[in-house]
Image (cartoon, rainbow, N blue to C red):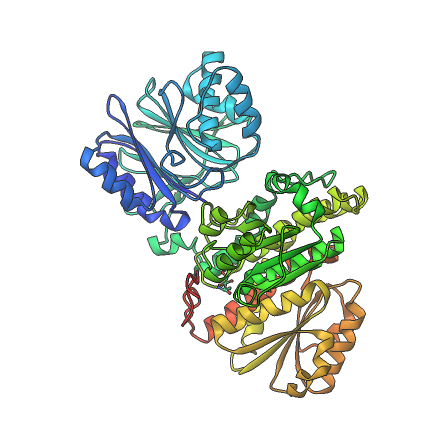
Length: 612
Ligand code: AGP
């Protein structure tokens, strides 16, 4: 996610843009920039937080009553001055800010390069602004038409604001898949990724819908359809919420907001990497180390906490789909146990923050022993991302809540794609199996949307767990790591002691803990192990344990013995963690809220553990 802001009106734009960008920093903050028109185009861009941009620009005393700004969460191209937005076209006439991912940017870049265009950044955004310029030159049309024609050729997600020195009294905006809000002030108009930049100036807004664009001038706003240029008569909303609420998207906490973002974050993580029809996976990071990967005798996954749990799901996926041996290691253990590792090994390092000290140190040790290291990170340009030989980013957007939620499911999504890629390239995964998984993966976001509707039911169930002092989470196969993750979620934000266990392992000790005071969460989706899980649930019931079942719709056997039941949609066994995790996230969230805990910043915890 990036933050976009625009202003046109009688006031100086620069202070409005900077304040707006500071309010949007929760959407991403690895670099930022502004462009102002005052007879000429002044562009200021700086890596780092908005304060670094201010330090650069203030001295120049930027002025102009038309301007755009951007705070970046990198998806293409490292965080740097040259990759920061706004980006200008080759002629310098056009300038753009963009939030989203242009999937066909490589093809557009090749076309433009053949026409003599050059590029000074690694971003898909710079390609887009030059493509708009190219269209304008070829079609001899005004800015609005050039933007419209260009967007009809673009594949991907975008929210953009474009200015031109040839038409200096307007901003042209457009959106598909990324949010854009227009603020209607008194004789002044605003653009924002959300209303935070301008809510203290106006609460009258138009929410642009997907496939809509607008020309924002000093006289007002005209909205049109990108596809056919037809005018649109949008509803004008009067906002009732305050600044703090908007940063959380109207949710009470970042954690719940990020749980609800998972349909989008999973789609964004898959976007451009999977052919939904054939199941073919294309990931440049894997191609870069394909020889090492295809000849690896084993794969070692390294991570901490939730990332370690994602790695455990990755082990099941890679061994199941690609038949390659996998070991999963805690970074803190791997680096000190004098492991056997060498040039034939491939290490996959998993980290949301990309800054976890134990994982980073383990990577350096693996590299020192000749291993090839692939990173799965959520922060572009993070230390781990820069330390690894290759990698794939989870496009989950900034994860603010300390308890990891959308990053986990995005990591599991990358592992799914990686396992499919490996199975396909090793010739052990059939075309039918690839297509079947792709179809199911495409349906996952909608299935998560349907489960998010259970939030109210889960909040009620959470009330029965509020006074627990211990809890057990049981799962089998692909859902054993989910049991571990569910236990971690509960304990780290509600401070209830919780343990995850393989369901069949319970009789080797933990069953001694079971009594009527012990909540036992059983993750039992339909699949090969369902019948065995029914037996495990009955073992718990026989000892008066309180059963909280996460299971398929109409699963009578488990419903008959459960105290609480959350019915979830079915999916392929290999993809079930993407679904079963969501109710566990919601359950732990509501228990913690009911216990009055600080959900976004739990005691003793940091979002990124950059020390040993
Ligand atoms: C998960 O909810 C915790 N916040 C924690 O276990 C976290 O997963 C761990 O510290 C690893 O962080 P990373 O993914 O940024 O490396």
